[in-house]
Length: 293
Image 1 (cartoon, helix red, strand yellow):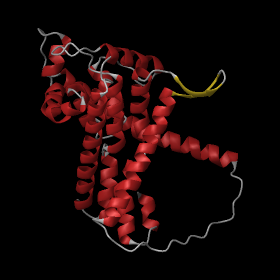
Image 2 (image 1 turned 180 degrees about the vertical axis):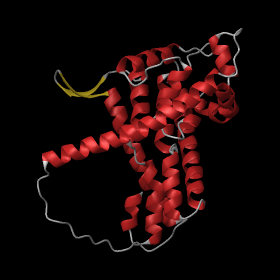
Image 3 (image 1 turned 120 degrees about the vertical axis):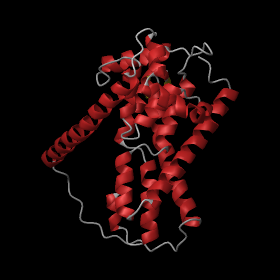
Image 4 (image 1 turned 90 degrees about the horizontal axis):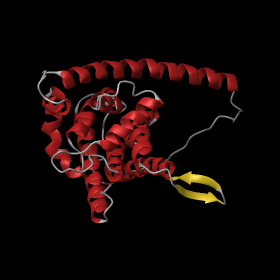
């Protein structure tokens, strides 16, 4: 979003700011990895002879990235034709001469950026994990089963509060709690699920595999059906592609647009877009019988 400062036309810059969060970023990857590893079968989609070139989980990843790109281009076109009408400016850019990149410089940059991300994201994730743990542990109900106590906790109450709005998407209160907590940072969804399903180390492969198994085994006591199915997992990933689940992005947009008008509009349109598309995919999937596991 900060790179939009190089765009001279105000309306074009604003359109770019509004659609930029739709492009998939690294913060969504933990959600994609958890859902695909647990619920998307590792089947061959394309290959040559005995060599597999594309599996179903990999195809799912590619489809999610293309969905974000299509949504960004589609909304940019819609805003250009309606909300932010304007004449398309002539684009002229002078490119510098191409040179082979320095492996040493690229490696140093990669290490620095990775360290910066770990420090920032790690701090946020740890802080949110502590808050989520507190919300899921209090108030105490020692006489209830762990699942019942979780439902009556502050986190459970919050999830129950928004459950009516996400139930049409195939989501329950546990996913609702994850969606709310991950507004601070999308990757927090995984640690929130870890807290809900009592898995401590969600950063390791073993921890994520254990979390995936517990999510697979989760049964809704009111319906007797699995809470998570491949269809629900796909819908959850689609929601994270399209929804505004990043408070730091909202803060940057507010700074770049000098007010709360456009950030609030961005949250509203992205949430509505995510809800509508996820609702459509979920109910089309149910119609074709994809929601049964």
